[in-house]
Image: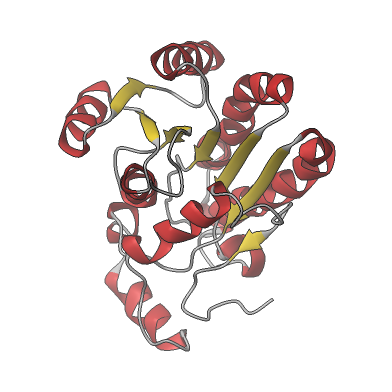
Length: 244
């Protein structure tokens, strides 16, 4: 019996990156998993590869979110664990950044977390049980040049996590965040090599993390009794980049 046996998890952003690693870790821990991601083709392919279910979702569109949550609930019977891991990252100094670039990042990385949570939360509150895990970033704590929009969104995720935890923990729904440091993912691959090399030199550990080094944190937060006392916390598998 795995630590998540009998639990049903919706992993948004689960077709790749950290979300994909979390989905695989949940499956290994015995959970039933539905992954949700923007591309229906990629989501279906990835779901087939790792042996779970999949639905398409556009986290910036409330109708899409409502439909995806309803479909995932129907597939599994209920959603015990929600992981919000959908995200995008682009680079631009503030002086050159357009409002469209700013709005796009906040729509996906912050408002999307709200929308999915808003539509999953009622069933958790009705049962008096649930775990919500939001994937933030250490940049939401310390900021980063040319990533102000991304850092602002992730800071918002951390504040949203704390505020929601204050609202719902007494009703059995535990809400926490993970703020990884630099991790080798497809999204990080799109950032220029000069920035990545300089960043690695700053890290006390001297290297970026791997997805499989982050995913176990989500398993801990989703599990019982392991995650039972985490309320509104932000856990930081970040190679020492931030030491709260």
